[in-house]
Amino acid sequence: MTALISRPLAAALAVVPAGAGCTSSSHPCTPSELDGACASGHTCLDGACVPTETLCGATRLDGVCGSGLACVDGACLDAALLCSPTQVAGVCAAGQACLQGACVLATSLCGPTNVTGACATGQSCLEGACVGSALLCSAANLTGLCAAGQGCAGGACVPECDLPANVAERERWRAAQPALGVRSKPTLTADLGWASLGDDPTVR
Image (tube, rainbow, N blue to C red; front, top):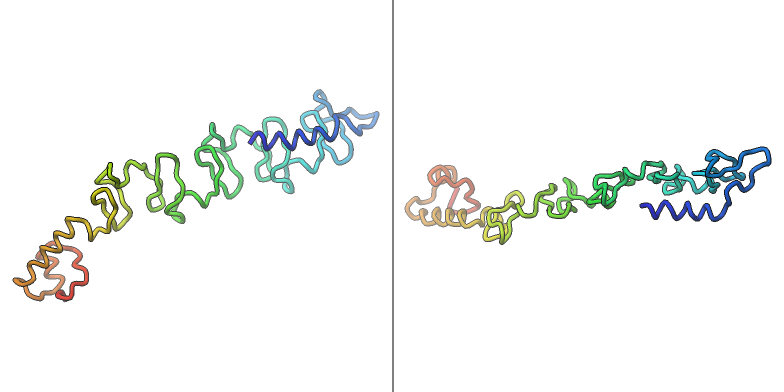
């Protein structure tokens, strides 16, 4: 961020010497006269005359600011408040957000509208929320988290109906069919404690 501020300011200083264009009756802009006079179309900034058109403002959203300040969306802000490696929750321009000290597009972050978006290091996006990656289902965490409607089996997220326990329950239910005959789904559900029998054609 500092480089972006210093280059336009340095360029501006190189174009117009301090005090250039001042009248004999005025106090020229110098480091000791921070509000001194400059030539037409120039402004005294930190004791040096710079082209007014280069200054941070509504028409120059990344323009020049005074020492210790940075231009963000046309406003000069304290540079210490900006997003940086030492200010990981700092200020970014409109439409951006600070992620680990870097400004990124806000729409790229994990959230309700981007369920696979970016999270901080050591985290992963699960259904729009950043959670610790170590908490997710994996070969190292056989009981880890999965998305809704899924369960962790052998370190992989699978539909809940394909989980070993549920598969075994379905097989138990099917094995009971010859003895039970064709019965209603509510009755079988109550008998077997099985909440979801799917679309088995023998159940009405």
